[in-house]
Each structure stands twice: as structure tokens, then as C-alpha cells.
Length: 401
Image (cartoon, rainbow, N blue to C red; front, side, top):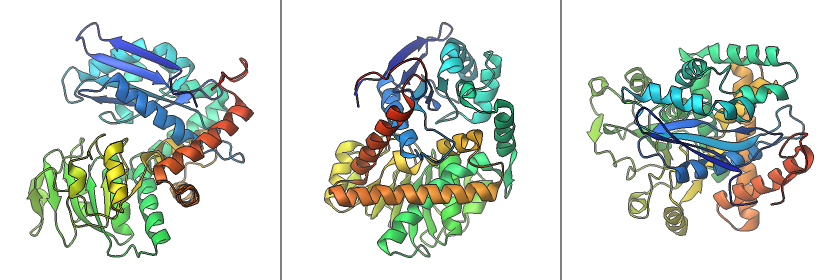
């Protein structure tokens, strides 16, 4: 695969001077998929790396028998603190500037710092029909597909929206698949998470329901720890819209510790579910967990992963682990699943466990890391996608790699 992205666009807000970026890594049938993030310090290089990861995430879910045909990979990013009073205006102006791309070939949605609800509101204000309207021409019945997606987003499970749960459910199933493969029981296994927003909170909930002990959770204010296990339901009820837990809700035995304490927690599984580049060559030495399951995008730096691997720590990569949310959108829109929570959970469980198994089988076969194996699988599936569906739809042959 070519290392250069297909398209890179830089944007400067004429009101605040803040910068934004769009990178389209690859198209399939003329469309690419990838979320829009907002965080201070977001760079073009970061967005490009995430766009390439989206290409892999899409391709890994290729099933020739399914209605959903994976799209290409893309990503958007805005260098702005989402809590800044000017952030919403910046978002609207960014989407106005990117409107031609969203209308034609970039299907986007929530990512770090931005909820889907906020993106939908800003997209409407920017004159867009939908943040995923580029996909509509690929649908057999657009009206039915849009109703199905709206109905799916309206579903509530135990008081939480299905859209807020499905990504964490996919992460939890990845963790459980790894433990099953290693012959380790889930019951009583200990987990620490960085991040308690949509992804981290849902992951913690489903792992707790599987019998695992959540012994440490980190948010913006630090780490909350309890070796006997935290009450995930109570912490979820006490978090704000940014995933920060009200410390008044802590029970006796819960300890407030430093922000980095989640890394050195005495656990079996570590789940970074917040920011990119969280594990570096220095702090990786604090990790005693046997497995790191990447719920966030790019949380473990490559040099750190090499050191972790050398001392027997298995890193299951983000392109596998957190791909469930993106896939669920398209399974629903294209009609592989309906607006039914049990159907969605069953389909997602099967898909994620199969993908984890395929990745670890390939790693064993090739004698490589799970990340290298996932990339190899993705490359194989991208070749099949390009051969069958092309880059530009009916516009002509795909470019040479």
C-alpha cells in the first residue's frame, strides 16, 4: 500500500486562527470513513496516522457475504480545547469549510472531544444533511437505512444509549477473547483503565458484568483505585459529560491517586481508553499487566510497544479493539443488523471475537506481534476490496500502489 495519503487538507479558522485538518487515506467505492476529533495540540501528522488506522479498521471487517462493504479511511482533527467557549463556533465553521468533502466522500462522526449529538447539531447548522451523507448513494434504500440508523441511535439499554455502549462492548469482547485464548478465567481477573468517557465507561461496565474486577480508573483529575474492585455503576452515575468522576461518590476503600497510577496498577489487563501516545518508552517500565488492550487510538508508542513485547507483554492493537463502533454504524446503515440491541450485541460479539482470533492466529503463524498481524490481514483484505470494488466506484481504475 502507498504510504502517502490520497488527500490532505489544512484549514485555518478566520475568526479565531485555530487550525484544523482533514486527511483521506484511501477511498473504496469513492467514499472514506473516519471520525472528527477536537483536542488542543491536534496536528496534521496525528490526523494522518489516524486516517491510516481507519483504513485498516475498515478493511479488517471485510466480509464478502455481508451487505456492508468497508469504506476507505479518513480522519478530521481540530486544534482546540472542546471545553473552550469558542469551540462550538470553531466546529461549525470547520464543517462549513469541509462541506464539499462531507457531501461527496467523507463520512464522519464522533471522536475524542466531540459527541455525535454535537456533531449532528453543528452539521445541520453548517448546511449538511448528515455527517454520513457521503454514504447515502451507496445504499439500496436510503430512506429505510436512515430510519434504521435513527431507530438504533434511539435505543436505550439500562438507561444508556446503545451508541454509547457498543464501542465499549466491542473492547470488552476483545479482552474476553484474549483471556479465553490464554485459558485464563475472566472471573476475578483485574483490569485498570485510562479514560472513563464513552469508550472507557462502557468497557468497564461490560467487563464488570463478565466477572472481572475493575481496580483502577483514571480520568482528568487522577486515578481512582480499589484493589477489591470499584463500583462501576456508581462511578458511571457520578461522571460528567467529559468522563470525569465526582469524587464525592467514592466509597470507603476507594483511593484517589495520581493520574499516572493506572499504569502501575497490579492488574492482569490494562485498557488505555483515552488519549493517544499515553504509553512511552519511560512509563512502559511501570506496567506489570500481562495484556494491553488498546481502546484508544494510538495509545502505545511504537518504541514502547517494542520494549513491552520484549518483556512478554501482549499489546492488542487499536485497529482491532476499537473498531466495533465504526463497524456498527455501517452494519446498521447497510442492513446487516437492525435496531435491536440483542441482535447488535450478538453480531458484534461474533465479529469481534472472530477478528481477535484471526489476528492472533496470524501473529502465531507469522511469528509477529498482533499489530503486525492485524496490518498484514488488513493489507490482504484491502487488496481484495480494491480488486472487487475499486477506489473510485465507477469512475475508473484504482491507482497503482
